Image 1 (tube, rainbow, N blue to C red):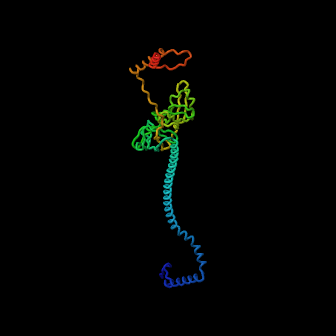
Image 2 (image 1 turned 90 degrees about the vertical axis):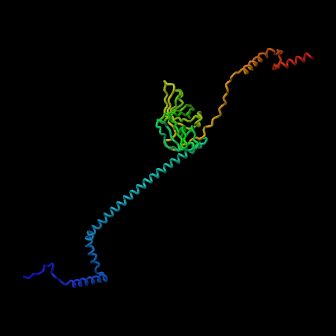
Image 3 (image 1 turned 45 degrees about the vertical axis):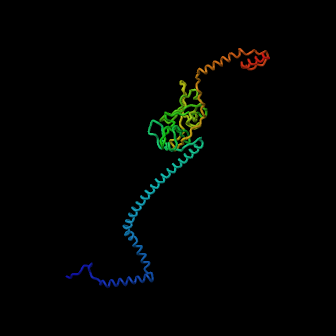
Length: 343
């Protein structure tokens, strides 16, 4: 029995012969393709047949590249979103700041217009904060003794009277608002000319006209504007104070009730005007000293009374139809009688 190797391990032509043969075939194909383009059609057919296989072979690579691109694009998009959010926040802050500046500029223009209308010198001030006492209505300004602020000076804005300076410090000052319970201001109804006094109502933020006679409430209607009357010597006359919001006339009572809303806008604005020059008032007449009768004055009065009583008794009677003449002194009359006797 003969032993032969399996077909897989059968020996064929030598390897050198195979290599030489395939090298010659390759060279021939190269020359034919380069010179005559004979393999162009074959190459296209082979490329068309192998294209699906190439795409399948490239799928793992494309998947890896796609995952990398996805994560890189995701991180870049997240960074762009963060940058855009920061830009949006910065733009919103800039817009709010611009709106605030525009509002302040508009308020300052209005204050400058009000400053031109108010007589005397005025000082621009800014509200720093509200006072600590919650039971009072007070604010603190950034102007004090160093800027010439004094006690009692009125404070206004472009819409009306705000209050009065009640405490002064070197660099700040405290202003009590008109709505404080301890504040009162003389006012006058612009439409009818009725004068009264407006008192603050505390935390309600309103004013009230007290001691208005019931028959005088007909001169006040809802919507009337109250202005300063100027009779207190603190607030100049003609400044807007409040608007009437409620009028109650009690038929059984002696006085009516009038509630007003201040026109000043300290809740909306932070700049105010301090009126540095108080209103000019006419000089007061000199006070007369009380009359105190003394001995000399009494003696003079008695002498005058006696002289007045003796003069009509000693004066000669005038003839009828004669023109009355003033009484002459006694010395003149005696001298004239002596001269007549000598003659």
